[in-house]
Image 1 (tube, rainbow, N blue to C red):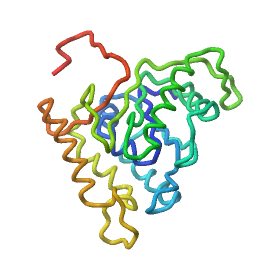
Image 2: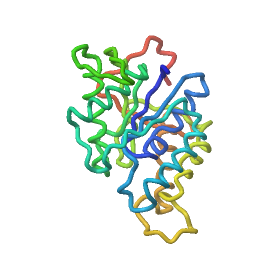
Image 3: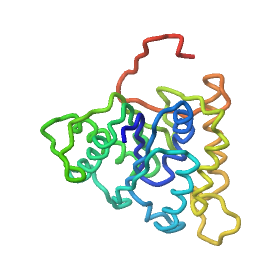
Length: 238
């Protein structure tokens, strides 16, 4: 299946927190979107890899994704090396997206920035014909997406572009709450963490409203780009 947008997320729930509104907005507009989770989030204090799998399945249905895979890399210990780059290249060449979204360039969790660098390097290498990959027994064709953007996560990063997600805010919350072992759940007796505090989701909303206010919307998601961005029509900007 060819996708229009392919989202890479180090942990299940990274995409939900960082860019699920943008994902759903583009799906509603007829675009095909998929997510590749790099790890199963097995080092998370709350829940297990198995519960995260179940929660991911629930969120995937809410998002309406056209594809979602998990590469099973080691949470906390994957590296930006040839082995891991080739895994990313296989996915890029499999789905041939025009746009790729990935984790923040730097963040509270060190996996996020390392994941962003991994995808950045793999995306470039994916366009080189002499980098050979085989998927499903078939040699893949070199392919490089036109655009790579990083979604903003816990740490504030000044965005290069904002996407109005006002109409999808409530469904974004549904996607996030699908990961009930990770976030606020007054009925559980698990150890509390940074992200399980009620204040964490309040901060997510505050960030969304702050970004939205900047473009005359109620809610927005922010993205950064490692290259300058251009448009053909100034009237598409606001």
